[in-house]
Image 1: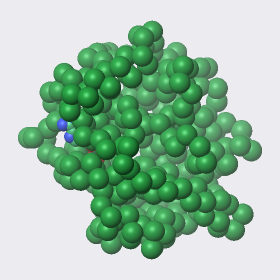
Image 2 (image 1 turned 45 degrees about the vertical axis):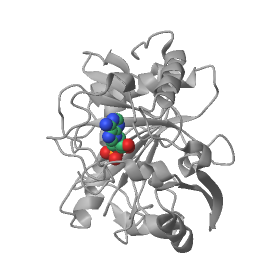
Image 3 (image 1 turned 180 degrees about the vertical axis):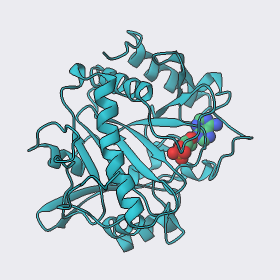
Image 4 (image 1 turned 180 degrees about the horizontal axis):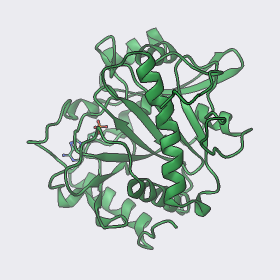
Length: 316
Ligand code: AMP
């Protein structure tokens, strides 16, 4: 059973965003951003990606600390909902350095480490927000994402899950193709998550059952099933950290194990990059992304694809 949000949630999300932008509480120069969409062919797959050059990302703090924590007391002008979640344990707040209009986050009220996996209340809350956004009057595709662990591209250590809308046209994220011919995922040792062999890094995708019929135990079981594959890849590659990106929509959940946070120590990649949305704060990184190519970058920051390998009782 999903959690209800206020009836006027979406209207409020739009109104408060406009006020915060107009009053200078956020830094966003979206109108002068450069967005280039590419369709890269790899064997039978078309990998859609968007390279964005957005100058205001320069202001985003590179590494937050628990002592100087922007989520301990979020700015009132950036707060959308003060109490949210099965136990009112979360807040919804705007991202001060948005990558798209209305970019917002679910943060825990108490400090919880960003290195912890998503728990069942968090998953239920995320899916409740996604379902509400799906029913919003403005038709946009939204995703939630969670950058977990030191090599995932996260910058703040206080637990937060982010929500953004996808490019309105000409961009179809690769997991959509995978789920188009699949049954909903039920974790077991005989059922593998989906993985496209053409994509040069390990990624584990679960098609979800009809989201309004799913409960928090189902979501938790699916998340754990994907996390199990991530942990196996990390162990087999002798990683000394647990880092992964998680992308959630009302149709699928995807987890991607991460080897490192940056390509060539220069281009930071988080869940957005992993989905094909490259965010560049400078002309130098924007040009480097174009030069190297998105798939080459993702191959470098992820682990080798494991499509076709099955799980046995020795896997996590
Ligand atoms: P991540 O990089 O995934 O850890 O996400 C942390 C996000 O917090 C970044 O996207 C920042 O733009 C955002 N952020 C940093 N400082 C603040 C702040 N004071 N208020 C709201 N959002 C912030």
